[in-house]
Length: 352
Image (tube, rainbow, N blue to C red; front, side, top):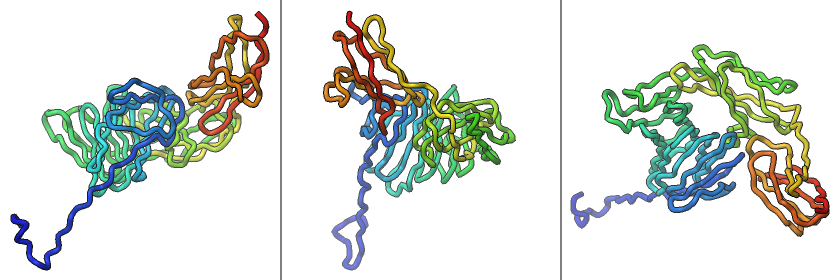
């Protein structure tokens, strides 16, 4: 009614309750990633760190992170990718994919919008599992569950808006938006724990294949990925145990298809031993079994209980140079990941 004062007795007036703002934080991190705040300097990203409006997140090669939203949604940022949080308010969340890929598992959004945009298009969702990619000169969106809305940033000829249902994808920024069918999952995936290999049955129409390896069934905690012209992959040196693998086929246009998931058991384990090598300048090279570019904390102490720590370093990978140490004597060192202790030992620095 145009004049509120004329509301009649007995009428029901419903007032919409705005959705609460979402908190966003880093819930999984493997390797080395960086955050650059809107008005700040770049710094190493830590597990559990909050993500604020304007933050730019970047993953190094062989590094992976997962963002958790307080409504249960998850966003996985694989290696060599970059994303910026454009907006985070009660009415909507918007990310900008600057490079690489992002795979999103978004819970049902009722009064809130969710969008991932690239240089050429925006992908909006209500609740779904989808991928957005901007890599090697190709920008694409692929829907694995639910439906997304795609709109072009340009003003070219043809449709500039498209609704993509499950099992469809679209190339972005290459003329009119057109829905294309995604390749199916591989019929089967096998692993050889003795030779540390994973292979899949070739998918008709597959021009190349991608393998991802994770510690969890949903593949939110990635530890390794690679791409090959054939559906056969050699695994890197990894700690002994079970992992979850995902193989996808990529067609000739560049669209990535449905995943084929299977558990993988790694039997061989890491071959590298933890050791310390003292150099002529009294600095020390420490090496230990490492998983890709995973982040580690290195500590050197004068006592075995690490009450007198004389050197600390945060590194990615399985090596660090500490020192030089001015005093001679016995030093103790240890390496920790985010989850547990990785290696420890001692070394002796001789007299000058």
